[in-house]
Amino acid sequence: MTDAIVVLCTCPDQTSADLLCEQLLNQRLAACINQLPGITSVYRWQGKVERATEIQLIIKSRQPLFAELQACIQAHHPYEVPELLALPVSAGLPAYLDWLNGETS
Image (cartoon, rainbow, N blue to C red; front, side):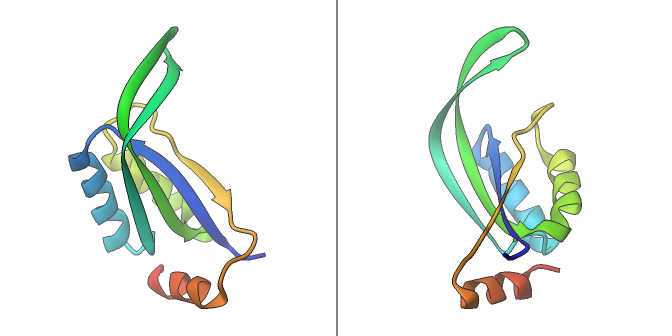
């Protein structure tokens, strides 16, 4: 087992996605972030079913940094309740995991 995590977060537009990526990378809270534009999210919000086109962020980080990563996203994200889910990484290429550890605080 490793302390690496994959964090999922959606953004409403490219500007907010770029801002979050820049903040997380500059603070060394993430080693790499993939942006998947054009996803469709269908969800319940305030009693109604909503549909939105969003950008999915796939953030590679480490569990010990999650509280700081969460605070950063909450400070810079335009949504009242942003998607923020951390998934544990059970295994990975050792060289990649070493790189991830080296690029995060």
